[in-house]
Length: 133
Image 1 (tube, rainbow, N blue to C red):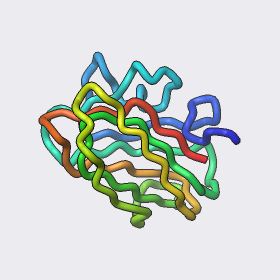
Image 2 (cartoon, one colour):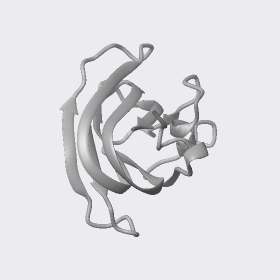
Image 3 (cartoon, rainbow, N blue to C red):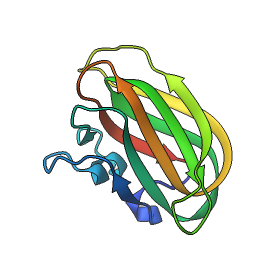
């Protein structure tokens, strides 16, 4: 099964509400789970991923740390506008040093996916990996 959110499949980060030069948004798509995108201390924070092509999305996997409220929105337009909700969850507190692994079944056709961190368990949260199937 091909990860449609990988740079090799043509995916890229087209927008993020915050950026740290040591932990930039594109780190959320690379295969190294030790690299990550980090929020800058305020919530909500968003990252928008453009898939290589409009695709049927059935599963989303995320590896995060310190995320409390998390949601996904999707858009199948050629521009990232008119997002629709896919899901919203509250993650358990594992502490800032432990990764939260989440797998969500979805059913949407998307060109863009917006990942929203509504709140964290502390001042900062991180996204280590986003995978889309």
